[in-house]
Length: 167
Image (cartoon, rainbow, N blue to C red; front, side):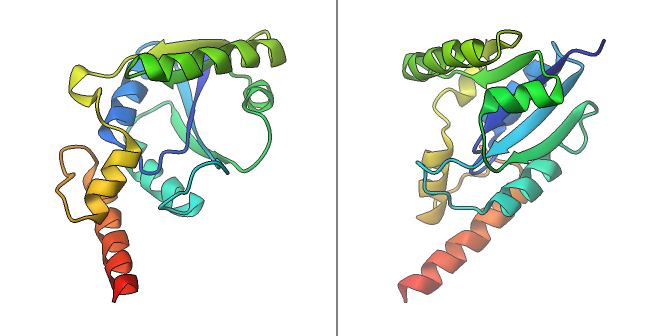
């Protein structure tokens, strides 16, 4: 039986740190479903459709990876639906771990067959957060070291839109 994991997140945008965690997950699991979640508590820069396009472009060369959107519902229910045995979560710092630990315990209660796997990205990505990348990019900073070229292009378009609104 193929070992399948899901790697959920808002991925607004999908960064090189996310890609690093995905590559690490592919060393463990034969199949990883990147799940783009809508999070009503976060203000997204990109639409779900834009995030789907970006993430598919970035991950397209990786066998065993597919990208899906979870519009509503519980992650544990989605994991059960697709037959995932694990939920992959990237953890950069202690603050991330505290939240992720709570979520992993809750998901275990909802779907006891699932295991949460915490993966740490390469040290060069430990300070890279989508929220920071978005802010730097919108304000005109260079984020090319932190995102795939296709993501960078879409971020430039968002910056142009933002600047047009400011006029």
